[in-house]
Image (cartoon, rainbow, N blue to C red; front, top):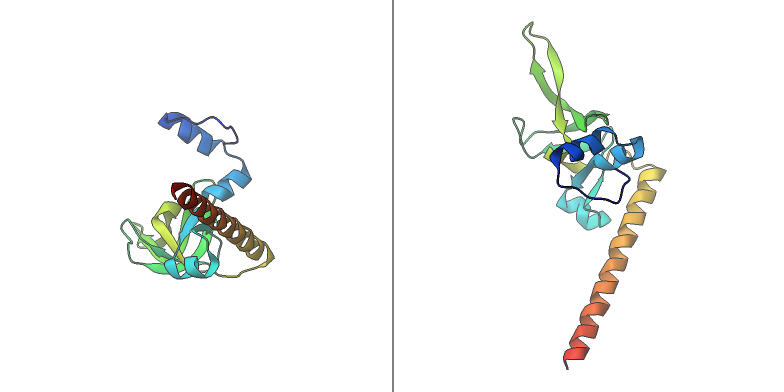
Length: 144
C-alpha cells in the first residue's frame, strides 16, 4: 500500500488491501459525503466513524438510513443500525455493508481530530481552486 508503484493486476490489488497497515486501512474506510455536507465543509470523502449517520446507495438495503454501530477496518465493512438479516433460528444479526455503498448524511461527533481533518482538507481544496483560477487567467492573457 505504501509503495509508489501502481498495478492493474487484481490479485496484487487484493494483496495490498489485505496487507495494508492500520493507518492505510483507515484511509480505505473513506466514505463519500452528501451534497449538503460537501458544500458546508468543502470535502468529498472522509473516514467514517461510529455514530455517523449514513445512507445506503446500493445493494439489498438501498434507501436505508441509519447510524454506524461499528466499523470493521479489516474487511472495510460497516454495521449500520436497522440493517440486519434473520438467521434460520429467527435471531437477527447485523449485516455488513461495504464502505463504497454508503454516503455520510450527518457526522456523529465532530471531535478535535475530525475537526482538524476537515480544516486540513478544506484548505487543500481552497488552495487548489486559487491555483486553478490563476492558471485560467494566465491562459486567457496569453491568448490575447
